[in-house]
Length: 186
Image (cartoon, rainbow, N blue to C red):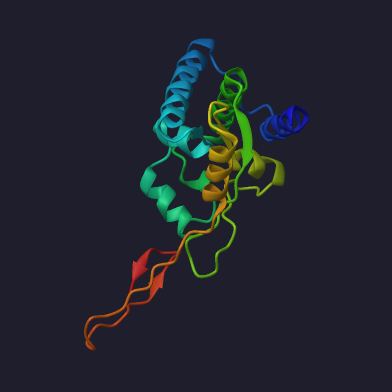
């Protein structure tokens, strides 16, 4: 797994190797590292694992409402909803993976499926690069959990969400068409 993580890390770095993004100021990097650790620790304490989404929401770069829209297939790729530039996201994700390695957490690849009738696989990155997608999809699970509990968490996280069926109470009710691209009804 370590070789896979290193290879994925290199792919993420190559994304920004065009020289446009200068190295982050050490003071800013330390502040970001603390924010990443705080968000990841909170998620780990609350649910027994931490994910990229937990960190991005926890540090305030991603709105939880946008995550729900993405999960419903209304946003093409999650990076488009992140409220900072991709090099900063890359740095935060490197810090997150370093934290997970120091904590001795287990990597758990997780499927993300839209809460829509099509049940399409959700995309995280603009590029759709499989290596970057795999990095985003990895949940970091506590070793303190029993094997059974870890397996249950992995199954729960990878399970396609249930669809909701609305049954009208009277004949006058009409379903309005919804356009996921514009977010408008009717």
